[in-house]
Image 1 (cartoon, rainbow, N blue to C red):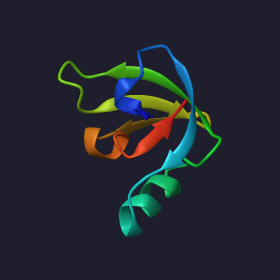
Image 2: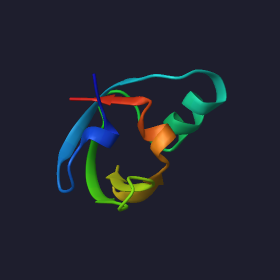
Image 3: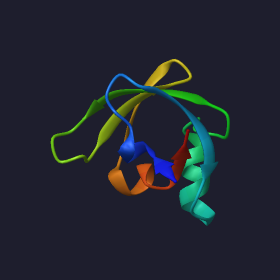
Image 4: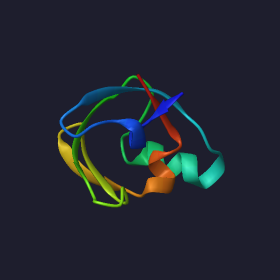
Amino acid sequence: MRTFKDAKIGETVKVVRLHGEGAVKRRIMDMGITRGTEVYIRKIAPLGDPLEVTVRGYELTLRKADADMIEIE
């Protein structure tokens, strides 16, 4: 299983599945990260938390814990 935290800067990835449950999963989906969405990895902080991505035309910053719940290909 590959997650956002495994992606490299400048890479465009496709969301395969969201792990997690309840409010956390709903919050990620409300940010526009849903199955099949293409996401561009813009920046990753030196310690890996947070990371900045472009999804559906806007920039979004994700915490490492949230990025770990998003499976990509």
